[in-house]
Length: 212
Image (cartoon, rainbow, N blue to C red; front, side, top):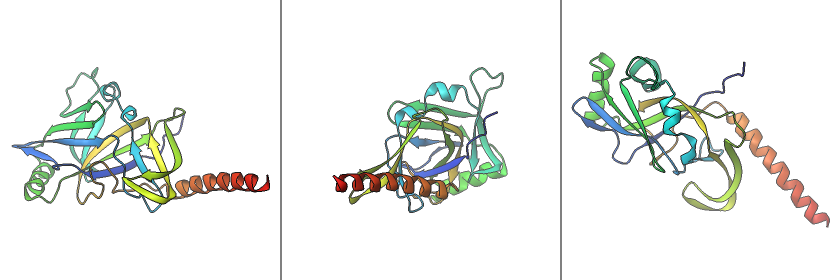
């Protein structure tokens, strides 16, 4: 049995934030083609439109939490072939991202979330995912232009082409405009190792040219 990859979390502040109409909330859970801010001081990241499809969504159980707290469930999306109907609606909008709609439950956590949205304190969305196990599901490289900026020196960038989505969450204080990153995974060591590996290859290539 293949070991499940560590679930990473990304969050962002949407354009217009979470929309509230009565007890129904809606908005963007994921935005495609939007560069993150610098993650953990190590790399920039972008999620491409191929990363998740409606077919993927239709086959998946996906929970919506409050601040990633699994004891504070706001709703659940169920696969199409499940006998029960889920409370969380998810729709992939081509080349745009993943939208959600949910009627808040009449529970303590549901009422709390509604109050914070009405006050303007809560407006960001986050999601938990892992990069798909298939080859070419992501790519690490150095770029001079990423994160919406141009750099004098190349920056380490991570492009995600295929991922598994496990949950979305309503969160406070998102720091990634229009599709970004707030809550970081614990994989900083892996990222630094990847960076060192690429740096070593670049140094080796430079030495080869210098020796010619």
